[in-house]
Length: 182
Image 1: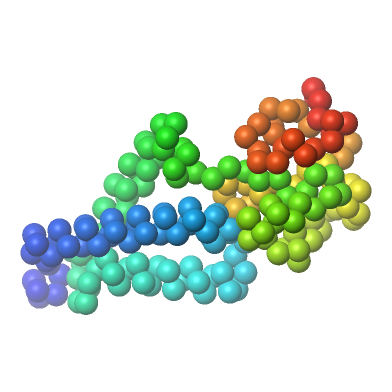
Image 2 (image 1 turned 30 degrees about the vertical axis):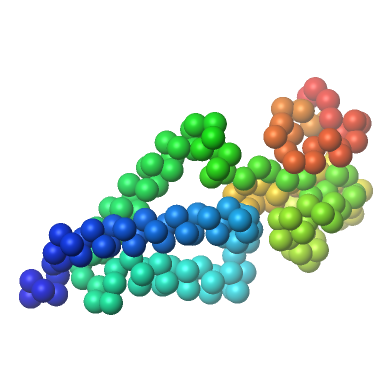
């Protein structure tokens, strides 16, 4: 029974190193490909996330998974999350780990270059606009692809406080009549 549940210190170290390696690889992939990789969960995306988890779990736990290896991998992942949380508070850490919000639409104008950069398809943008209750592109003040992969739709009407557009890539493309003190 012990061999089915427990692992040696060497195996524990291997689990820790494999878990760190897979975590860092996933961070790099998400950073390179953008947060779109993990957002907007279509059925295709859900299948991909399940496959990611399976690959990461298999690599971290080794050929014969044991309870202790699972506990070590979970503890390692929690520790890594804590470390990344601390690193994100540092200026260079925030630049390395986090993405910037990106303007996808300035008024009714779709910014194709930003759509490609964020891997957002026109159909996905149209779906987000419908979900926000937009009936016509003229109702749009701005559409922003957030660092989380979510899409924010801001309507025309009330002026947008410039503070809300701080750090948004492409914010300078917004018409001056949309921005102003609220």
